[in-house]
Image (tube, rainbow, N blue to C red; front, side):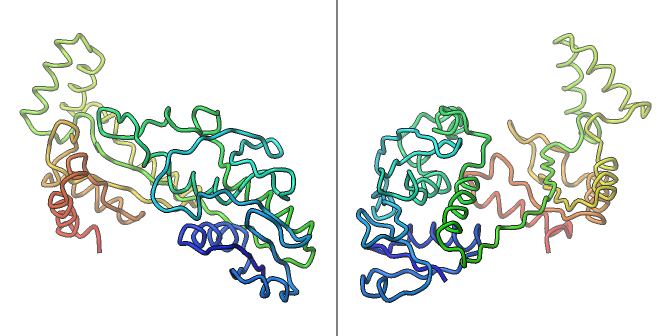
Length: 302
């Protein structure tokens, strides 16, 4: 049991402590704001404040976990054993940066709540993130920080039991468009044909005609191969299918098509099937409910 002493317990503090210690390192923890509790505790203990109490394991705190609301924060990057970090904590701290505030900043996507320029779809651009700007966008820094923290605690408290998390892989297939040419109806197919022809996309024209006369396979129809690969490799999978009506950004096959229904039932025999929300439903809850009802009507979502 690890005791964490701090001057104030907030929802932010509780969340990130439980995430790093309990979920990631498998360490049981308790919190206290009373100095006498900290002194009496005979097991492993750390302080997370501005100043250490004794000669204990100490991590100097940033103010982020004790604040309310969203504030503009200046980020200065550093390095910890080859891993990028920020919120430096000074020489007296056993960890050279505030690992808890930095982890909360990244996991909560704090920077996305700050004023920023959205893209054409109203999204936060990854290019505006500190991870992209400091070349660690594809690096699981929070996991790496937690592992290093576990090593440091184990070196200080040899009896402390650490159970590093076990990970499993699930293949997620997002099927926003199940077929490129097949099962799209006469009007959509004809419109697509003339658009490809007008733009001199001759390869697509040839593929499209081959699919129509059943002499070629639809280029998006790789579902049987995916199912076989998942079975062969013994990998769990979830297929997310879209059940939206046709619109500017939603161009899947109509859920009323029997061929599409047969595909869903085929996939459901081997994998979990779930709903992929349409673009149009992001700002329209009633439309999302309608898509969910379509799922249920087709006996896809229990």
